[in-house]
Length: 181
Image (cartoon, rainbow, N blue to C red; front, side, top):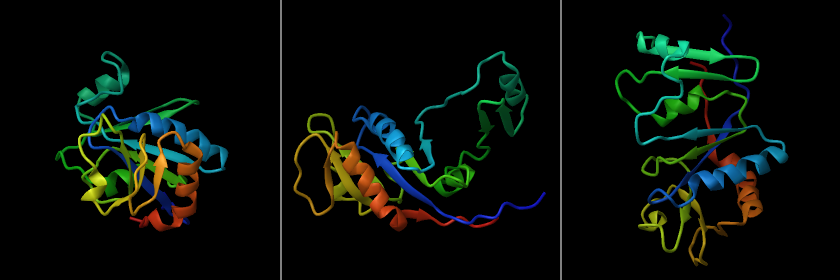
């Protein structure tokens, strides 16, 4: 099989918060259709803190995975999913990004606040435990429900168009460099 040639790089930007319940999923849910309307192919990586299954006990894919398959790919004419067992329990953001289709223009990552990659922090006045941006140089902007006067760009949490414009204008700064291995 011929190796797929990569002719572009994806912009990778995370959406993080100090704790759950701040609106990471909600913000991404609003950003994705706006970015698509602007002509971008968008993928999302969601970090889960707990063990999860995406297939249903008793279904064939579940049975094959439980039988010991390292990877199980399920597909039809509408969608596909690959389930990969992390044998060594090692987490590597770079490895996970490489699993995303190379056609993605923008990859949004939900979570992984402690990893070193460009992130937009959601800071909620009465919900957030701390201001991550004060100690994390990888935070490139803040989306908040209060007015903040900081040295990095700050957006109202509901200013979806402003956040989308920021991502597009800075897309070239946050590209993931794919290699062909």
